[in-house]
Image 1 (cartoon, helix red, strand yellow):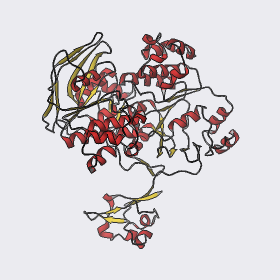
Image 2 (tube, one colour):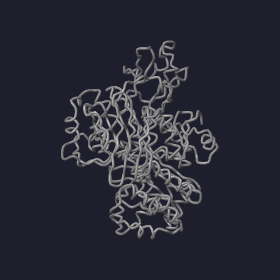
Image 3 (cartoon, helix red, strand yellow):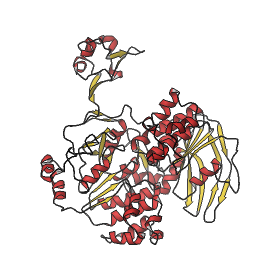
Image 4 (cartoon, one colour):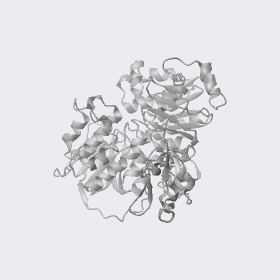
Length: 588
């Protein structure tokens, strides 16, 4: 579908009298295709516009463009079932490069990876019959994918794939970590991967006893250790902290110097650092997906965040994602809401020390640090689920807590659960500011026990925000969320903090989310699993400088305001490290 889009800053509706659309078929039939707003400017009704193009030809001020909305194409690549999901297009693996795929869940990214990895033969839109490779290759004659698909059809490529769902690994392999990795050591570099991914302590452990983060690191090491022609990584960051994500990213970048890599990833900071080019996948989740042509990683991510692809002339989101420049820092006066006393908690093998501080009214306080450093223990101390050995929070403070690990709470539907938490369920504010951006309408009648990980996470966030509280604590709200859901999350949480004049504490490993959402920052440091110390709260500049210095990476903003990780060893990286400014310089 193609629609007319009005550039309001160029509209001269008062001067031209809307002569640009006097021949529009909608206008002739009496429909108000263009409506005059309270400022006297024309606003095009996208529901009524048929994209006839007349207004574009008649407008003398170039104030109107015609753009396309996502729609299915002519030649499908693969279809699931007669009326099932259909994929159009495929990414293009490139030798010597890391090719990224960016898009929401249910849009065909994993299907693309499976086809390119030789695990799924495309049926060209005919699910009832197996397409012959001769027919498939005829479809791709003259394209960059022809030679690659021909080699797959002749089984002349050796391919390695790290799957998206790592919890399936214990189902297909029984044994220890050492036994699994020994089978994959085809390049003689397994020792390096064991050290860099901190896997030595796990070698004697059985695969079925590993946590999600441990299993993820084992899966990455097993894929890297193989000697193949192409490598595919379907999401490397789930369950990993930012330090582990960075180490995995460095290893994949090092591999890409000698072998081509394709990666699907929802963490934009890691994808930006890893990829050389990126394919944007858009469409309607669970209905159809379109894989766009490759773009440079900076341009591709910026276009994705803008919601508009200029080369394809497709707008797939009605609003851009904007990274705010923090000019307001130090200017907004906020009163303290929650006073955090100095606290300590000692376990048999771990000790946590918290220096104390305050959380202010209407602010979002970010918390960063590696896994096993005490962030979740800190959240549980505040929420009253753990008792501190020294110091205690004022129990008159009302607290709503979303834990790190969520469990299905029974057979109640999502709506029943949310209605039980708030009396505001039927208000337009709750519907528009919680249910809509968290995409919960479609699952309101679903039993909570039947939800996927991402759905359960969104319900957990909504449930936490539904309660009346002075302090809201969200532990890893981005876990299991796709990139589209992550970019909507800051508006939900920040809007809630401001509208309720409440305090919000967010613990997360997605550095883009922390940057977008936080007004100040707490930094946890120490030795994971041994001791942890909480520092701050700091201003974002001071806190991020301290945090990024520990990571050994530098951030800058590009012209759109988006934070970007400097390539290790680049001129900007060396320059910022020499000045001690790890967080943001101006320009790109």
